[in-house]
Length: 494
Image (tube, rainbow, N blue to C red; front, side, top):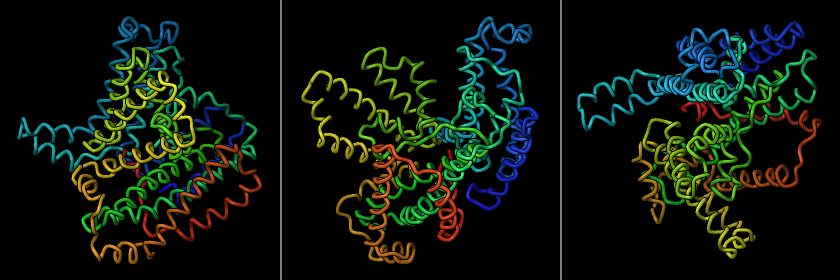
């Protein structure tokens, strides 16, 4: 059941009717209904992993109560007295056990294959685990939320005493598969009134679902056709085609993930919840640090609060700050997948963030440099450099194995493409001339620029009347113009 489907629409509608139909009978009934619906949702996708996720949920619920500060959870102190005396070790063990589950599903095959140079006998184990071990969808997001909850409780936030409340948060279906990563206390701190769904919440939820469907199906999936065709025929592509591929993949990745997030936010909004947004026009950022404040915002917040700050942040000098940034982005790359391409991507962003921090220090000393970056030419130049870096580093992200990425970089300049490439990719695959495809990309970039100007610079939003009119038009357009087949969400792999 995909998020853009008639089946999901019916599922969401039934859940909404049941949830709001309970009225003021009590939050526990609503939590139970949400948990039941979420378990059914995940069970239709990967029922074999429901017990694993349930086990992780129960473990983290009780473990958080065990490591809570002494002022909390008096009833558990006798049972878990050792962790009350040594809370640091309790937190560390809880984090380790969560990461062990993540490692076992996502990284064991990668680790074994990279150890075969020292122990050749591991090759058979690496192949066997790679062929037979399937990672649960959303396990990375699930584990990161667990760690955030344990750390928050250790720092003094109250540990919940309701397993039902914690389970309904952990399994909440709009965010279960690919986030956004949501803190427990942020989620449960929202009021669940008995007055029913407010009109503006309902309209906003439907608008987010409609806009997310447009982003995913009409934009990302159609771009994905070109990206996939080009990726499978790199040796035939010319340099111009490869540059188009880089641009198209960067746009596909953004619209695919942003579309999913809009669908998740809209679904949650229809149930009375507000999830954290994940994107804020990242392709209009003028520095790499600004990009990471706008791209996958919930992951950036997690990395900052639970990794960067504990490492010392920027409090211990420029050199240590750059090292911390590199370590954080190295781990961010590894979090995305078990392949050296993701690690390389993370390291590049770590180096880029370090260079940006050095540039900030130099700008504080040299006024002329500060004035340069503040000027219009400097701002434009900073945007060009930032986006060129971001889009070029998507290449190892798209080709994590490495060989295809190297081939692409080696042929970006003055490489003549195969004469059949235009025929097979543009005319047969896209049913467009190359010039028309360029025009489509140009119109897409123009539309993004207009949206940025209106929403970010002028601070204007569509009123509810316009949204009511546009929602059915968007959904009809998705139904009418959707490409054939079902292209999975890119971030489901992470």
